[in-house]
Structure formats: C-alpha cells, structure tokens
Image (cartoon, rainbow, N blue to C red; front, side, top):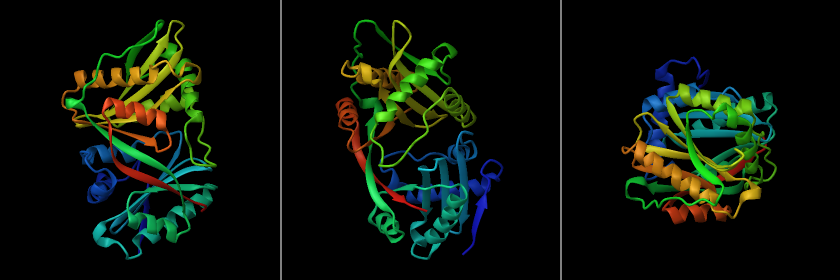
Length: 310
C-alpha cells in the first residue's frame, strides 16, 4: 500500500483534484443537502491554508488524509476512503502516516469526526474515544423569513467584507476571547486568536477567492459585543457560517440574534444566487442552537468527534 505525502502549497492541481474527487464520493455521508464545492474551490482550500498552523496532506489509491495542527491538543485529521475501496487497509495506512507526523510534531491529542457507523467502527478500532457531538444545520436562504434585526439602545450593526478595519482590530480580537467559554472537548486547548491570526485568516481566504463577511454589533465606544462570520466562495450557491459569539458581559441583550439576522439579510441582498447557508454547533450549545432554529436552520447530520492519543 503506497501512501504519498505531498506539499499542497506546491503540488500540481491534478494531485489536489484527488482530494476533491474523494469529497464528492463521500459527500452524501458528510454534508447531505448541501451543494458540493467545486474542484477549483477544493484545490484553493488545500493550497492556501493560513500560515498560523501546520498542514500536511497524504494521498493513496482510493483515499486521502489531511492533518491540521493548531497545537499539541488541537490537531485535526480529515481522512476519506472511497466507498468502493473500503476494507482494504487504505484508511489504516493513511492513519499510520498521520500518526508518525503527529509524533514528530509532538501532538498529544488527534481529533477526527465521523457521521456513519462505518466511521465510528474505524475510530473504535484504533482506540479513539468518542466525545463532543456537532450538529450541522442548513438554512434555505431564499425562502427564509428574516425580520429586521433589533438592537438595544447604543448599539449598531455593521458588516465588514474581506478585512477587519484597522481601527477595530483590537476590539475584534478581544471579542473573539468570548469563544474561550464555548463548549470544547475535554482537554483541548485551542490557541487564543491574535491580530496576527486574524490577518493570516483574511489573507488565506483572499487567496482562495473566498469572501469573508463579518457582521458585528458595535457599542458607542467601538467595542464589539457580538459577531458572526459568513464565508462564500466565488460562484458558489453555499454560504458557510464560521464562528459566532457574544461577549460574556453583553449576553441576554439579543445581540447574537441581531448579528445573525443582519448577516443573512445582507448576504441575500448581495448574493441572490446563494441557495443554502450551513452552520455547525456543539450539541450541548443550546443557546446558539435555539437562535439558529428560530431563524430557520434545520439539522441535517450529526458529527461525532473522536479523539486518539497518537
């Protein structure tokens, strides 16, 4: 069984295209109801990862693996095997290569997700322990009822495209600290966002031709009370909700719902071609799931995170 490691930053498009082909073969299991991303979008995703974390890629006949290392306890593997090529040792060979690299990078916790009984059995076979469950939900944007958002006195909503303005960068970084108390798997320590992290993410998205749409609630002093980020690739019919959060001091004011509604209304106005918006939330995050449900998001699949000590 030959497993080939490649550098996605310089690999020929035809090699990265194999990752897209595997995505398409497994799409119904992973993201039911969503339009699949295009080949160009998939190639750009793998080629232009942010420079603030380590990315590794492997290719086998009938399978692929990608590793994203943000820290010793925050490393993530995305391993796919074509449905017609399973039970031939391809997944095992790919995971062996991933674990060798994890040892080199001093990774202590490796996390992956599964959505099917076969995926669960594969994780169990290697001693991975199931933990947090992530609920993926979809909103049919064109048909959604999106009322005008309401904000408390002293707050205003605005959307930044592509880049956080310099004068608000520090305030935005502080607001991202509100993610620190979001539900996380036990023992996972994700690096705190910094100005450098924000700018690296923006640069990566720009190189992928992926639009960042960051909607925030600002008070009269320019502090960010809540935010939500939507991402959209050029020509895609699918919008993706990335992180959303409300600063602890400003919870219970309706800011989270307001930024969500404003973001979706603006997306629909700017991009009428978008059919579907996806979002993912920890199953135990009842507050955010309630807000999303009240807007019209409906669950489609649940991902279970499994953790392996490599």
